[in-house]
Amino acid sequence: MKILIVSDTHRRNENFFRTLDKVAPVDLVVHCGDVEGSERLIEEAAGCPVQMVRGNNDFISPMPREVEFMIGKYKVFLTHGHNYCVYMNYETIKQEARDREADIVMCGHTHKPVIDIEKNLTLLNPGSMSYPRQEGRRPSYILMELDKDGEAHYTINYL
Picture 1: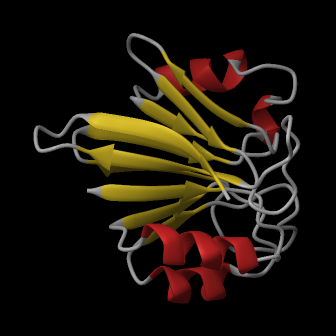
Picture 2: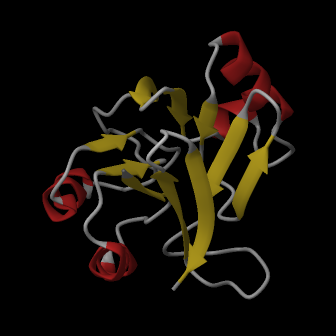
């Protein structure tokens, strides 16, 4: 199973489309928020199920602020991150994920990619497809793949 994890496209979807072309086929797309009205376009382009949440720039969106769902044996907590002060650090969002008994927490908002694997919790932030802020400022995304035994593997990728 291959999962494409993206965030912070901010209605500039060309890099999302390029990424889809590059990594297709995928079994699931996860968008960590700040789509700014492109929900339908992203869902149609994905060609597979999509999990998406509202970010701080999705002002009047009907999307949920947070969702929980399963990927294989993993319970995922998905939120944009701004309500958990992820710009300061990831401790508050990690504690919320632990309280929800999640195995994986996915968020965006910082525009900087992160894979943080701890013993009982993995934090994934794919960075931004449109306005990257990490050194080098390259658009980024995460590929999550479940191997034949159902174990998850993660890679940060750049356009």
